[in-house]
Image (cartoon, rainbow over all chains, first blue to last red; front, side):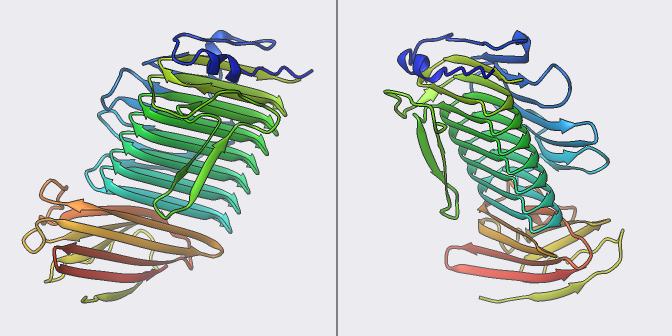
Length: 303
Length: 122
């Protein structure tokens, strides 16, 4: 039995209102998915250390964001984390001794780590104080990080084959972390503004996680465990939106096929928070929030 | 535009190597720690107190490919190395046996410009 929760319509209709929070599905533990404006979003498969995504922001503005994504299970995991607080680091790692960190610095800095065959990694950074890290273990994985202006951080960790990952951030002090374990997963995080933070965790096959955040201080966390799950979190991006990387490459997010939203429009959005968990197979979800200080949680589980 | 190609072929593991700034003030530094290679684009602040830079690295390791391109402004607020050079950009890569890097640093300030580059093969 598939439990489908679509928060998009309700949230579109209540755009601009605060504290619209929902959760459903058997076995849901309220602490597994949280979304609090001005505080952050978290999503966790089962309360354990793996398959968790956290986008934390201790307050509006400032340099206090942190994103953590840990996908997989013991012995077969990938981790990505960025921390924009005092000790800024961006790192990607996998279970075992391989761990890399990019320390805080005034110059732009990047780390790239590839093991396997036919992996592709692109890092594009323009501005100052930006850090990024990409780690790829497996075959034919693709990753692109593009950051412009100042103080942005991004980390991608991929383990498996044929995964696709994109983080594009324009503005100041945005952060994003994405970890993928499995096959053919697609993760897209697009952030246009300041102080946005997002984390994606995927473990399985053919999952698609998309986040777009517009303006400032938005937080989003997504976890997908299983196969063929599709999820969109849009905070200020309406039901579809694209953003260009520094080399002109366009990346987009859109509402998953099979879901519809009426009246969703893109516009400035601040201090929104959203968390999504999809466990099992073929779940579809869209959280679309407009305005400021909205909160939403989606929890879906199939046997 | 003046070019300073340097061909480095370093096969030793756990070695450190660096290229000091050229007299013209533009240099690429390489530091090895095992298979991790750190590349830094630096300038002598006496020659280049401020300006714009672009550092590009193309990597080929077997069939793996990566590209890193970083651009931005620099001035006296950039971090400095122990010898006083300004650090413009840092890239760290894992380089397996047979891996190749092609690195280029371009700097400009008004109508002045310069570039330096080198190729690296493990």
